[in-house]
Image (cartoon, rainbow, N blue to C red; front, side):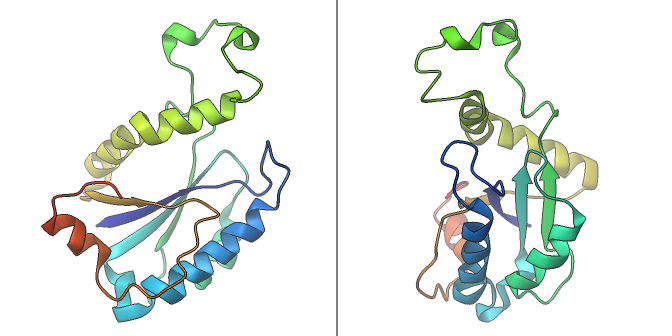
Length: 167
């Protein structure tokens, strides 16, 4: 399987913007300009990672926006309180206010960087082992990523041929 991954929140913690509205637009454009074309829904799952903002009611609202032909394409994963959304042990007792630029780069932002830079790989490795699946190629988009033109080719086939792992 291939994965499109999004880390989202309903209201941005720092910018006080309507992140949910941006996510809806992003998913709509993802569907219209990629997933619905050539039925890409058959070889991709969309993972919506969050820290407690979303629940099963959101799947009922958001999954149909993806336009896929199969139920279960959208997966919600709450990272809050997980091993993937914690400080490394060597920072667990730090006074965060003493961190360089702690006002510009708050804890949530640092967790996000660590998640996408390091922890996402162990998440998918563990998921593959637990469920017997084989997620190998990952495309990251943000809640405000807008695919504005049609992508008719299979992004993941392109990644495989060119030996990409992450796009």
